[in-house]
Each structure stands twice: as structure tokens, then as C-alpha cells.
Image (cartoon, rainbow, N blue to C red; front, side, top):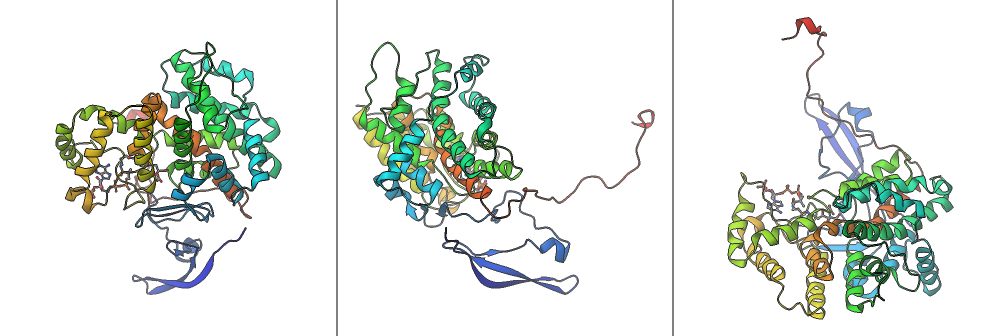
Length: 437
Ligand code: SDX
């Protein structure tokens, strides 16, 4: 696999207090900003860098995904997200992320069969669910059940064995979708539906979620295509919070099942993958177009914790390209389902229009992100808002395990160990209990 790293000279760092200068190497990649290599900075200057939320820190090299936040571009292995959602299936994109290129006919058939034949889970996993309350949040159940998967696959926990890494990746991509469907069924009190090998990935997921033993389930091709597209749009996204969580967990040589469970936990946050649920709750709270100005003002009020959910992004300072694809898909799905006047979609479209004309959002380059429209489609498909982040996790498992695999296959895997700026109390003598105030 080509690594397009090029040496681009040096940056000279000068300590004005001592007059010392240090030359730091600069590297360039295929696209995006060059990087200053600070790996020797502490050894040479006895200083750390300080970047608490990693706004200016490249944590790794990666060949998987590239985002140009200014231009609103998202690519996987060089292919734009628009082309991939329009011309490839989710499993083709999964193959692309895992193996580096789109599959040919033979490899596509092989990979689809591999994933299909790993969708069933061990029967004992069913008992995990019965320990949860029926009203548990689906993401809480997913954290527990995915974390428990490593207890079932002792034959694929050796991260230094390429074959075991590959089967773990296939098992996780396949089984997370089955476990997500089982989570949904458990929370609504319906029986689990075993996967079907005659359906493709998206169709099978919809079947396991909405099928019932009492009658045949007919897959709606428009809904299945929209589901497949939503999965592709959520597959991978550079070094976001949950992917960085998976990489850090993996750097300690934790097994891949435990790493994906860590990623699920991180994704759950409302600032990250939990935002799609929060968007629907926000739209429902707004309730009507005439209340939009009130909420726009609240979003701008620093004393009000309310933020416009589904708006803004750490990297995109332009429209999130995924939001554009989802906005069109929302119209297609709602039209096909005969939902012509969804009040939440109407409010979302009006909210986007007003926000994008408001100086506060324009000046801060706050645009709709992937979560702004996804929930509207998922709700129209019949999913409760509490399942939205679970669906995000089904898709992002592909990115997480691909990023994990890329990291583990790096020549020199080292445990991630950030440092800090210590601002606590200086050294002091111990105070016996009798002498304390
Ligand atoms: C995802 O990283 C990824 O790639 C994530 C993701 C992926 O695929 O993995 O794309 C998925 O997580 C999408 C984001 C989903 N989250 C939301 O929609 C929640 C709402 N958005 C915000 O919480 C926020 O925009 C973040 C968390 C997404 C980004 O936060 P940043 O980069 O830390 O932005 P910031 O807090 O520095 O904001 C800059 C300014 C601030 O105002 P000032 O201090 O300059 O006056 O913009 C304001 C913020 O207050 N701001 C918002 C806002 N988002 C930022 N104001 C109102 N509403 C918002 N949504």
C-alpha cells in the first residue's frame, strides 16, 4: 500500500527565553495540511505541546478517509462520498475501507458471503439481553453486549495474527448489525429475528428489526436502498472522537471486540453520535415553524446551554457533504412512504434556511452536519429516536475496525500515552487526621 508521505523541510522553533532554536521535520501527505513532527520535541526542548481537544494535532497517519472541512469534501480511499453513496453498496465501501480498493466481482461476492455467514450470533448471547430492563437505552445494551463478544471468540483475539484480525473484523461488521436489531427487538418486547442469508446487508438489518414470526416480511426496496446509503454515509470519518477512542484502546493491545465497545461508548455522547437523537428531540420541542426564532436566539445565548443540534462541526466549516445527500434521501423516502407533510421535516428545512441566513451561524461557519437529516429518515422508517445512535454504531463499526486494523498493521505499534500540564497543588507535607480543619 503506497504511503504518500513526503519530507517538506523543517520548521524552526525558537525559545525566546534562552535564544535556543530547534529544527523540526515537516511532512506532507496526499491531501490536507502538512504536519510538524514533534516526536523529539520533549527530548530536545523539555517542553510538551498543549492541545487539549486535539484541534491542531494529527494523531496518526491514515490512508482511509480524507475530509476537507473548508470545501466540504469527504473521501474514502480517494473516492468521494457522493460517488460512493450513488454507485456503491455499503459492503463495497466496507471492503474499500478494510482492503484499500473497491472489490472486483469475485471479491465482492466473497466478502458479501463472508459477512452474511457471520451475521448469526452464539445462542448464549441471547441471555445477555435478559439481564437488562426492557426500557434500558439501546446504547447502554449495546455497550454491554458488544463488550461481551470477546468472551465468545477466543479463536480470534490474537491481534498479531493477520487471519485472526481479519475474522474479527468480519465478525464485528456482521454481528454488530444483528445485535443492534436484537437490542431493538428486546426493548419493544418482540422476539429476536434470526438473520436471513438470502437478503443483502441493509435488507437483512431491516428484516431483523421489523420482521415478526407471525407473517412474512416484505422488504421495501426504497427503504432498503436508503438504509444502505445511510450506513455508507456513517461508515468512517477520519479521527473523530469515537475512532480516536478505538485507536487509543487498541494501542494497549486490547482485543478488537473490547475496542469497538469503547467506540460505542464514546459515540453515545450528544456532541457526537448521540446528536441524531437530540436533533429529533429538538425539532419536536420546537414544535412549529413560528417557534424557530425563539430557539435560534437560545442557541446564540451563551447563558443558555441549548445548542442547535445537528449544526456545527469540528472539521467542516462548510456544509457537511453527508447532510446534503441525506436531505435528498429524506425527501425520497418520505415521498415513497407517502409521508408528504412531515412537520419535523418542514421545521428542519425552515430551521436550516433561517440559521444559514443568521450572522451568528454564518460567522462561525456552522452548517448542518450528518445528524441533522438522518433522524428524519430513520423516524419515517419506523425507528424510535433511541435507536438512532445504535444505527450510527452499526455503520461506524466498519470505520472503527478498519482504522484499528490500519493501526495494528503499522510497523511500530506503541501505546498511546498523552502527557499534561499539571496545575494542581505543589508538593506539601501530609496532614494527620487530628490536624485537619
Ligand atoms: C458528529 O468529528 C466528527 O467527524 C464527528 C462526526 C463523525 O462522523 O464522526 O461528524 C459525527 O459528531 C457530528 C456532530 C454532531 N454534534 C452535534 O450536532 C451537536 C451540536 N454541535 C456542537 O455541539 C458543536 O458544533 C460540535 C461539538 C459538533 C463541534 O464543537 P467544536 O468544534 O468544539 O465547536 P466550538 O464549541 O468551538 O464552537 C465554536 C463556536 C462557539 O461559539 P463562540 O465560543 O465562538 O462564541 O460555535 C458555537 C460555539 O458556542 N457553536 C454552536 C454550535 N456549535 C458550535 N452554537 C450553537 N449551536 C451549535 N450547534
